[in-house]
Length: 146
Image 1 (cartoon, helix red, strand yellow):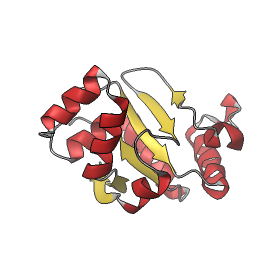
Image 2 (cartoon, helix red, strand yellow):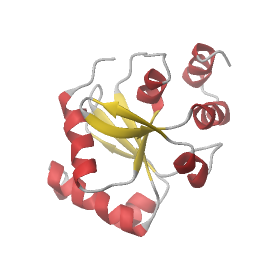
Image 3 (cartoon, helix red, strand yellow):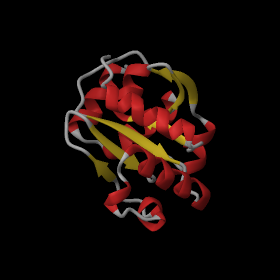
Image 4 (cartoon, one colour):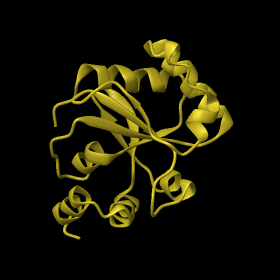
């Protein structure tokens, strides 16, 4: 799956700032063996105050400091969208069908470009997709044989 340089740079910035995150969405689907087209990268952020502050530092370092995003915004459970497709970054702290602990405990190590990252585990990915139930989520489940 082709990875845009901005996505690679953003992941590197998260890693440099010790942000606790897990890649979800289409890039996780690709990690689990089924790449498909997407206009964004979905990144789940571990919802703690310490992590939210690390995210704010990373956003500032990446050039998004002027957006006036707060710790409360990050912890609100609402999706924060940065940029525009096909190079949009979606930051997520709440996912349907799975708990924060399940996401974190079930994460799998992998790479993204040359960066070490975590991806959502297959079981957690499936539970999330089933809970959301949109057409594209059901199509993703079909790709996974579910």
